[in-house]
Length: 136
Image (tube, rainbow, N blue to C red):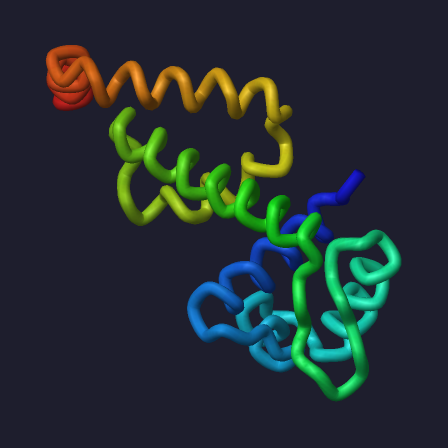
């Protein structure tokens, strides 16, 4: 089972691979505001856990397991941002709020939030009424 810290690294490696086609230790370190040595240490751990292929002086690669989990983590993050926007959380708070809650929700809770977001997107009248309430 991945820890919240492991999830952050997997998610960032996935995002780097999607954006640049490669994930370098230095880029992951910069994105997570940590030292490159911390990324190396975590990459070695993620390699042992089967999420990452780590070789010194090479970019980081995700295994099939890592790719699947990375995609799931990015989807969770995006879905929580979407949920908070729909319910009217101020834009400048969204990223910090998502970072604060994403590791504390069960996957079951995420499934229910997914259902709720999809229902709210289908019911524009409900969302309109919700936004009206926020103006009070």
